[in-house]
Each structure stands twice: as C-alpha cells, then as structure tokens.
Amino acid sequence: MIRNLIWLVATVGVLGVLFVGYNRYLRITPERVEQLENPLSKVSPVPVSDDESLKVPSEQGEVAIAPGEAMSFTIFDRATGRASMRVQCASWSKVAGAASDLDVVEPRFQLFRPDGQVATISADRGRFMVEYVEGDRWQPKSGVLEGDVRVTLDAPAGDQESPDSGQAAGELANLLTVEMRQVQFDVELRELTTADRIHVVNPQAEISGVGLHMVWNQADNRLETLEIARGERLSIALEGDVFASLTGRRTQPTPEEEAGRAAALERQPREVTTYA
Image (tube, rainbow, N blue to C red; front, side, top):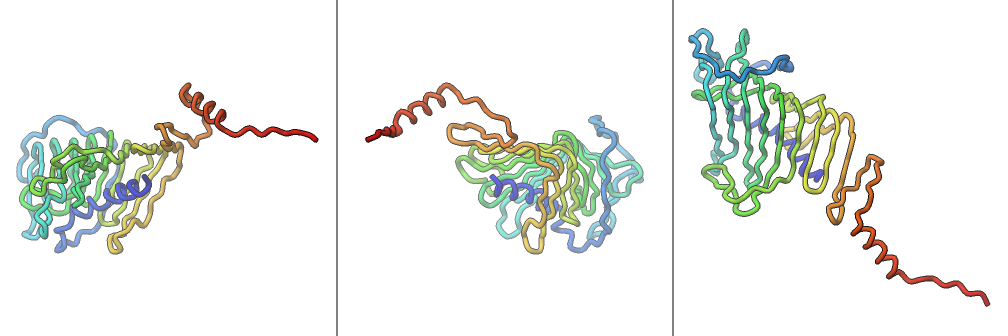
C-alpha cells in the first residue's frame, strides 16, 4: 500500500516532467499559477483572430494557436516505440490577458508504464502555463487542477499493455485511488501541493487527511518529500475484509466472528487447580 502510494504520488511529478521532455532548447522563467477563483465555463470557445490566439515559444520561433475542441495526443518512447503518455481534454481556451496560459475543460493524463500499469490523472477543469508547442500540441509547465481531481493506479488483470495504442488489452484492476478537490503542480520545481482534503483508497487500506506536499528529485530519480499535513483516519483491511480503524472507534463484531471466537475458546486447554 505505502509503496504504491509513494509511486503514484511520484507519478504525478513524472507526468509533468514528461510534458516538457522535449523542451531542452527553451529557457523560460518559472511562474506560479494562482488558484482558480471562478469555475471554468463549459461553453465551447468561439473562433478568435490571430491576435487573440495563444502565442507560445518553440524551437521554430513563436507559434500561434487558436482555441480548439477535444484535443488528444499520445507521446511515444523513441527507444521502444511504446506509448508512454496520453493527454486529452474536452476543450481549451486562452486565458484573457495572459501570454501563455490555458483554461482546460475535463483534462485527462495517462502514463503507461512498461510493466503494464497505468496512472491516470483527471479533473473537471484546469489552468496551465504552456511553454512548448509541437504543431498544435501544448505542454504545461505549471498549473492547477480543480473539481473532482482523481489520480488512479491500475494494473492489467490479464494481458499486458498494447505497445502501439497504449491501451491495456485485458481488464484493468485498480490498485490505488487518490481523490481531492484541488491540486497545484510545478514542473520546473517538480512539486505537487494541495491544502485541501485528500482521500486515498486501495483494496487493503484507506487513508483520509488534509494537505499534501510532494517534491520529486529527478536527478536521483527518487521521492524527496512526501508530507500529509494532518492525518485524520487510517483503516487497514485484516482477514475477512474487516477494517481495523485507528481512529479509536470500536467496531462491533459480526455474529460469525462471535461464533468463531467462541469456538476458539472451546478448543483452548482448560487449567484445573487442585489442592493437596
């Protein structure tokens, strides 16, 4: 459980690193993206002129892109040819008055591991600072996700991942799910933070708390910081799928458990004391 949790949280940072993996030639000053104050409109963006298009620096110079619908693209590993990441969103639009910020509706990122595991990050909306465009493809440098933010780690129950599509050929079994209302990320700092409530669930345990701070050390390929500001509840599944809560609340045993305990007591040897 703990190993999967650490890997999954670290995966969020790795996703951000992959976003800018082809950005070796860019040198852009990092900026912090503030928390969204208003919900992003679900209304489709209207066409805009070139002056209103998003202007983003790239290897070929400044690239202008207009708002689009249902963007989806897959990044493949150059060495193996396997899908490594997929990026999707229902729609996106330029933030008014910002040089390189995007508002995104229903963003969804998937990271495909060689062992077949799939990490997925999704939210209702997001705001990204873009730093690189390849054709019509944008890649965020920092940003915020809001509204039903969900991070999942799944493993194929049957066949392994299809190398050409990135989709698992067999059914996926959930290993871990992290839920929160809002999360901020900074690819330059490789940092993931939220001050909101978090909820972590896997088949063996359940964790609830407030506040998460994660820093990934890319040079050493290790998790440098993983902090939960305040833990609230930890439940661990024991035999028979019984949850042992560490909150101090006692759980009443079921009739079957009572019968099992009584039978165990009957089998114990009885001690008889006699006096000479």
